[in-house]
Length: 141
Image (cartoon, rainbow, N blue to C red):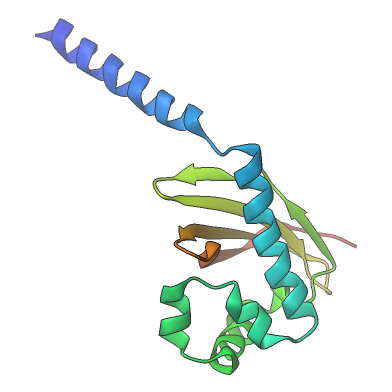
């Protein structure tokens, strides 16, 4: 019985490792970074329409207009509008999404970590389906 349980556990670990090895291709990595950079560039220009265009269909449906979308960004994600610095980390695959982590430093020197979830939409390519923003533990002077 223990032998079977160990064998089953080993197979599950091998399968999990194989899934993780699949990872993100270099082309996918470049593509998702370009999407996030494109939205960040649009935010820095106060171009709500362009920033909204990088959002996935579900996000666009939820907010309805670029103006409402920008209100939400200004209220809860202000660091992404004009960060002092931006560092892209290695993306990972999560089911049908790619997660792109980005470290930001805001104007006050506070660090932030944003994890963007990007999905591939038919006829639209990679689009941002959500962002989880957490304060960092460091202050940069």
